[in-house]
Image (cartoon, rainbow, N blue to C red; front, side, top):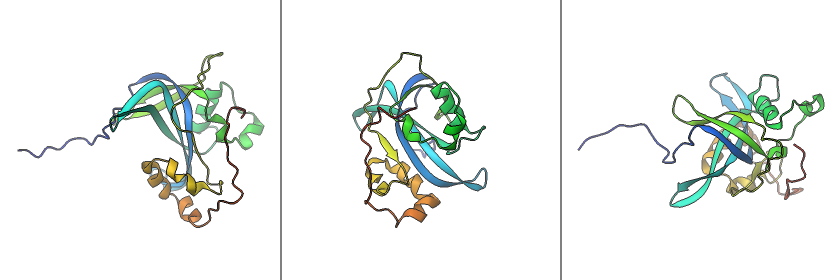
Length: 198
């Protein structure tokens, strides 16, 4: 017998490096998260894409292959979120759009995603590009999730969000502030994203 130490694995193989077509299926406000690197609190958002034509086996079942990336919720000139959104749209934000751009607009939209592996071997969304003109791929298998702290029923949506993301949300100061303020009243459900401008 031997006591063997090895690198921890999630059990799910990483997405191979390359360029893929993705559909945005989740937009999740992670709240105000403490950054050890910058020693300050920053508002974070997670975007998740379903990768077209790719599946992965989880617990004996084939499921859509997805990949997520966390961003600081900012459209400042140097913000990665702004750079990726502008590359995704294929155009710069107007001054008016920079005042307030609702990320619900990207749900269900396609883009090209370049995936690279970081120094730890994990797949990362390195860059995003607009799909070619005339390209359309609207079919998706993954459920759409839009988690917004301003939604009065935001806590009811927890049942749709994977536990590992819920645990991250619960670490936010936003979660601590909002825990007892959610109310189901005045909730407006969003059923159709097709007509939203991107």
